[in-house]
Image 1: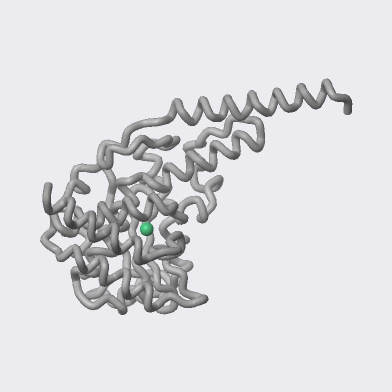
Image 2 (image 1 turned 90 degrees about the vertical axis):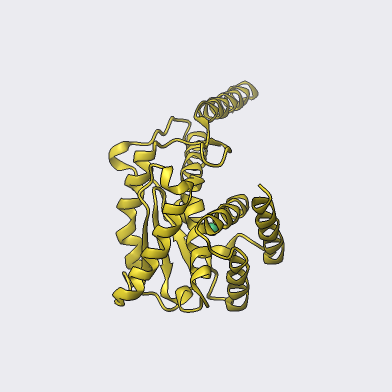
Length: 255
Ligand SMILES: [Zn+2]
């Protein structure tokens, strides 16, 4: 290949990146609940649909829902109390809280649109209702923070760059193109934002927000080679996170 055709290729590549970047910017909107500017490729209805479509498979990977109906109801009640007492109730999302049978993986996670899960392994380590509220509040934060939708937009951006074509979300086939990694992996900034939102929801519902720090301590103690909870996976420094939670509590108290 001669120099001229290389130049043409590089130019073409740059054009594709510029086009993808332009597309991404054109999708930028301000999250009405967090005030954060985000590039989002999905509507709220699409987020809800993706969550509902992926929920059964993801629940199955954790042994399905736990058999203890009283425990399942308890998780639902605490989750609903957080929603009803906070700005989460004014969002269009359909919140549902599920207790999963998994006794091995200490974890909690949220799908876009409001499907929220906690494993029995984590649930059974919690010392009180406030800590459960902390876990669920943090996950509600991921939902209304639209973190999964943001990651989907991000992965579309790179797909566009990689394939040189416009990869729009096909409403009929939303889940197929989105890997579980994209759905469930949160960035460091997402975690901190969800901690802050979790603190707010806890306080709005009358829970003791310092118990979210208790949750962090439990996760720290439980961490091992086979146990990488969602809460910790993106955080090399949980102590820094505890500090930020303390700050968030004081800031929200003074508002
Ligand atoms: Zn999280």
